[in-house]
Image (cartoon, rainbow, N blue to C red; front, side, top):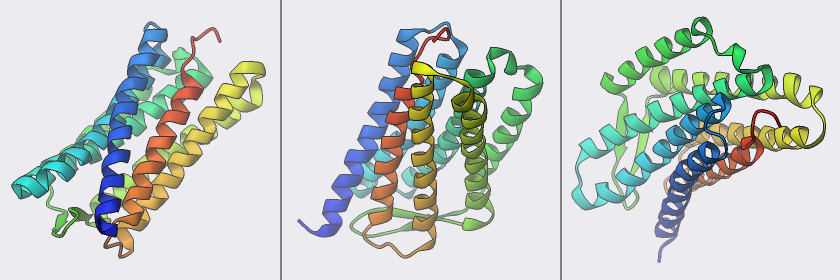
Length: 236
């Protein structure tokens, strides 16, 4: 087995873990308390993150078999839109968790949804993907403007989530709830590291996919840690 094949298998494993983790976490969160809006938002976020991982896993598996470029064109766009909306719903989750459900108003939510929907339409129709043939299928997206805007949007949601949970959560709570928020906070930090790794993978020459595998592994870990810190009932 070559080193390229080894990294390809590791990529499959981490992508599968991410897909299963996202769907499982969503199920467990809703099972614990489906009436709490924070848990519903968390579940939606995790489904989107799971969809992100699952879309990449699908084109990684099927493209070498069918050699159809449309597989990557479709699933890569789905995964970008999924991580965008997943980050937005994660941001909503944090705001509700630390500021109560009263934060979730039409005036606050709709602008985010409209902007992301418009941007998703751009992602779907704009030609920005380069398919790199080889033993391991790979893609390169135009850094400017499409990928750069997406990275900035995801960073916005993640950074505001980090700041929000620290300022209004960790600093103002005690006991078990504070421990859970610290756990979630660490998951957010790890997800931020995953984003940085993903940016580097699109800038640096990485023919065997080391950075891609590291990104998927880091993001899967972040998803699990964040869920462990937020699977609670509102009264906790």
